[in-house]
Length: 346
Image (cartoon, rainbow, N blue to C red; front, side, top):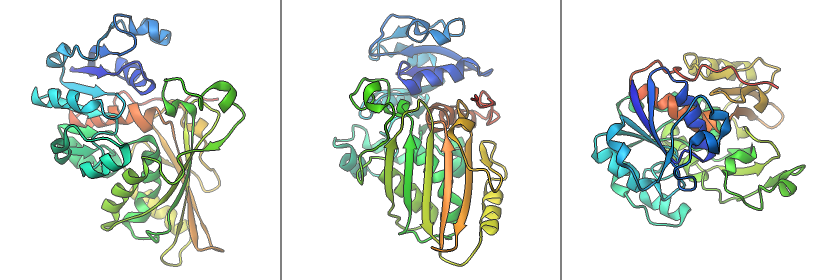
């Protein structure tokens, strides 16, 4: 049994992680922390865990449980992960960070887009970007995993085969993503107030969303050269899910059948990637509560562009589920362990 500690267990990603780990046959949860609900049972904060999780929330600063863990999951806002990660690594414990602190190769990129100095820049050299479908071999050997952001997950999985095969113009990529409100976290804000978000769709952080450089960095690794994208996120009135529609100009004449074959071959051994039938386009409802990413694509011959549509659950494949998938790889467990969940519908 692997002993797991979850730091920041009362955010949406943190509690989803607890839910998944509580049903994992090879994991024992030894502790959870919270800034807002210290000394309260986690099942009191989230009653859906009643009868499944009996742990009491401890203070974030009281990290005595780290020495008892084999793996520490950190689900904190950006800027708060670094000290926890350092302490765990110094104790010889594997770490999976669900925040943004270790996703960049260079501290300068983090500091430019997040507006603050990186607290542990030297750890960026050992951090592995935790997208299993791209970095599986590195993840298996890693001590520190930077779990990808939810928007980058949906986008990178949608684009990886095309970019690696150089089928698209790297300066032509446009990404239109729509996310459910849980992606904004549990903290109350005006934008996520029911009266503001219900029956409303809005773009936000246009041309300056913090996931843009993360997407570009990882696409550049696939392409072997710099990539610039246009990325626009939207908030839509649903709880979970991300739907990304991606447009790119083709570098050569081709058709939808040939591109589908590239995708089917690229993802043929991937347990959580589903290439849908030709006329069936991804719905967020079809991946709800699961670790799946559903994909489909088509060539628009009029414009010589390819259109790719990707759907994930932002809290599972976009956060907690991917973290569990990474843990499975790090400890040599079957990759699907604890994640073999049929999506919830309707």
